[in-house]
Each structure stands twice: as structure tokens, then as C-alpha cells.
Image (cartoon, rainbow, N blue to C red):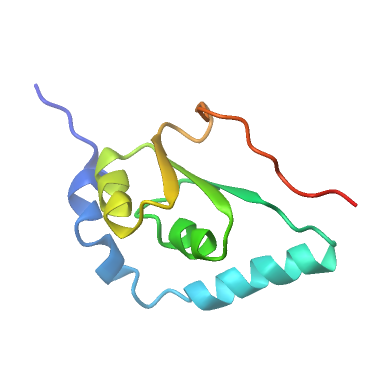
Length: 107
């Protein structure tokens, strides 16, 4: 019996289904929280990154981004969007980042 991830098929249409999502508002909210707490990260870890929309947006802002997802189909779609993000296969409770990264510049 061949068991497949149910999200593999969904990954092909996920971005169309999620097209109404308020990615701009979500990104701006995160940046406001960082600003409020005087936190200016150099890198970002996007757990359950799906097709990498948020990962890609933050990478365009100059952050080093790691996107982790347990669905290979979602990661395949994410990798089509950018080569600026390191997309990794793994579950968000148990994953390995292949390199050390500086989180932020501390005052």
C-alpha cells in the first residue's frame, strides 16, 4: 500500500485557495511587533511554511530565512518561488537546520 501525504495534492492549488489571505497585514504586524520590542532579526524560521509565501516575503526584505514543512509537495511549490530561502523537509517538532545562524544584532 502506498501512503501519500494528503497535502501533496493540495499543494498544487494551495496558493490559489489562499490568494485572499492578508499576507501584507500579517507581515506588517510581525514587523510592528519586532519594532515595538526593539528586535531586529537577521534570520527567520518559518515553521509549517507551506508553499513559502511568507518565507519568500521576508527573504526579499534581506532576512536569512529557513522554511520547514513536513509536506514535500508544499516544499516543491515553495522552491519554485525563490532560491533565497533554505526550505527544509521536517516536522516542526523535530527538525535540523544545517547551519548556525545569527538571530539578531543585540544592542
